[in-house]
Length: 283
Ligand code: AMP
Image (cartoon, rainbow, N blue to C red; front, side, top):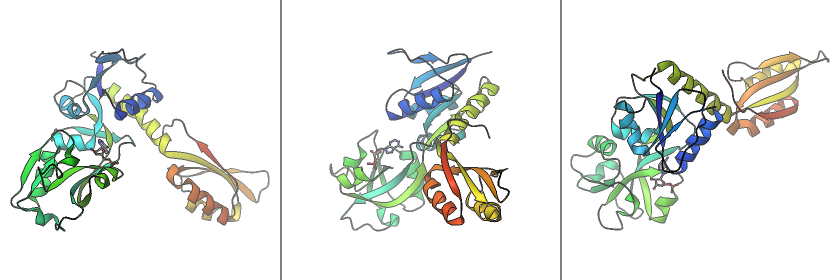
């Protein structure tokens, strides 16, 4: 059987994040300097290091079976691919931006403008819905300086914190879409069972990273109220305590909500509330 081929970003923050995620999921590989390939120990998987923007098309064409890339790049490639899951990192939005002091207040007013972007396909689709005439300036990077260079009146670019926009005196006119890092797969992977195994392993880590386990004790007569606060991933686990008036509860809680949930549990009457990190899971 042919080895499953997975494409990972060759450099940058996403390359580090993907390598760490694969390591945690038991899909470690040793990358030699300057080599474009690596083998995963113990499983028949070959990793290829590629430019993040080439991963969607190379996956659709079958050069790789799976890949880690941005959903923005998947949309821009227009390739027919399966998105198996979000990997919980790289969240950003694609936005149309104009100078802070621009008179433009709505997308329809972009008519006749020059719009610089490294997302010409997604931008053209968006602009067709709003304006009849626009001139696209396709670029591979540094889009944020194109208004200052006099190349465009507006740009379409990725925004994460907004600090790049602020530094270039630009403001968001409209949001085109929200994107994040994803695991993609083509429709006919070399080894479909191995592809499922990889996806399940990564899913275990991605879910574990976004949830904590909360354990607490609660008077039995307050249990249903507490369960409403912590419904768990499926349902909470309730165990008896020696004191029949009390019970212990374990439930998965989104990490981003843990503080708020602990406070709510205290208000309901819970005690000995513990947050326990989850390093891996199968649900
Ligand atoms: P920020 O200043 O945090 O809004 O980030 C904006 C800059 O970072 C832009 O130049 C974007 O092209 C780039 N950027 C932000 N998020 C991402 C992402 N998820 N993937 C690739 N580039 C991004």
